[in-house]
Length: 117
Image 1 (cartoon, helix red, strand yellow):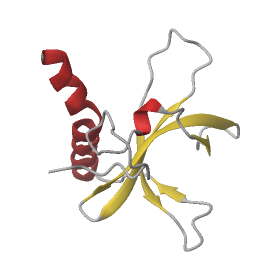
Image 2 (cartoon, rainbow, N blue to C red):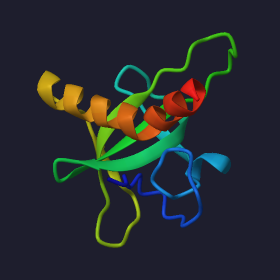
Image 3 (cartoon, rainbow, N blue to C red):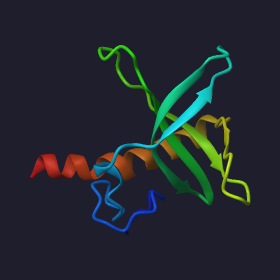
C-alpha cells in the first residue's frame, strides 16, 4: 500500500509515498512553546494522515549541531483558506503511540530496507 505524506509533489520519494519531499529543502514553521515566549524555527518533516486525522512532524532547528534532533508530532488542521494552520497537542498515550508508529513507518521504513540491501 502506498503511503501519502502530503507533501504535494509527484516525483519519486525516499519515504515511499511517491512525492520526492526529502530531496528538497524542508519547509520551516515558527512555533511558540508554552515554556517560552520566543518563536522557534522548526523544520517540517511531513504532514500525514492517521485514522482519519491529520498530523504534522517537526524538528526544532538547533543552534548547537551536537544536540540530538527531537521530532515533535502534533495534530494538524488547516482552515478553509489554507492559511494559519492549527496545531494541537496529542492528549492520549494510545493516540501518540499509533501516530508515532505510523510516522516511523512512513518516513523511516524504506530507509531501513535500503540499508539492508
